[in-house]
Length: 415
Image 1 (tube, rainbow, N blue to C red):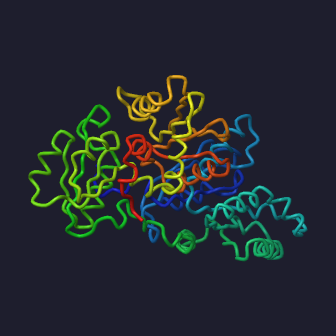
Image 2 (image 1 turned 60 degrees about the vertical axis):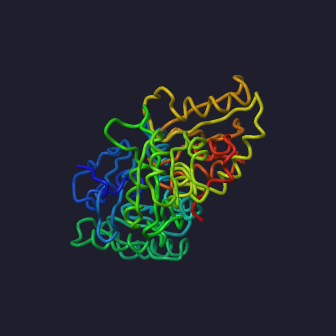
Image 3 (image 1 turned 45 degrees about the horizontal axis):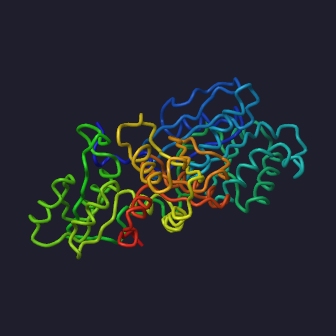
């Protein structure tokens, strides 16, 4: 049963395993997870789609392990599978690139030949390094090659990336412990250190959560940003009071002193701002997640582009969830209504959901991203980087609503 203490997949360390077909990726994934997660076969292309498993891995902690199709898949569906591998790469926090020593057998193992044999692996490692992601290179099936071939590969690898690859055979005793220890050394130093509420509040501060339970709220449950924020505030030893919008004024009267911070759903920003005590700071779950998952300074700069829109502009609204749109949906109805009220019905608004996100963003004058509670920060930042490279302004739901209601400068966010 899921509890408030469970770690959502979006907050787990994402370990992506990459390599050619039959390099041993699936055997490695099965060994890491301790179960038959991926089918192991000598038939090329057995892993046809990315496979993922959320679990605890000592000494790494909560992880998501992702197995990918081989990036040399030449089948009819190969390009589609490689595209899914690229998507996994955008989510990956630590990349494991698996080489097969079987490809060294009978080769001269010169640098030029190595560059040709492992051209795809080299491309992917360079891609990860350029994205500032740690990479663990594994040379698998070392029992198939001789000492000269293994030494030549190690020299080639060190010449390219200034560190030694990890030589393995999946039949070796304790090899998984060795791989886990190597992964632990690759873990980003600041991973898991980010806080949703940052330095805004601390122990014994009173925090009021305003959470409208409308048609968007799952019956009998809270939405994920509310759950995660509440859990963090409890861990901080804050004093937390939760109310629906219609109970806000009653709650403020009941409190002896004004709350230090009020966190609200973005859709009722205006109402809460009008009724909050002057002493209380105000923010929203979406603004907090903009800082927690994305690039808040870029979102704030992007919000300025709202004022430059025209009736002929084109806006992309990107949702992470793939739920069926409901009445008064914030991304499908409320934000479009606010924008078209200002700029007219001719303003073009496109929507994407889930992991659908255009490669070419040049047709858009503005991108509005949701709070991204379902995605890990690494993937959200891949979207932000794409927007930056193409010089397209980007913001998010909470920042957009605060800007459109004229209170953005009154909203606080973690530093």
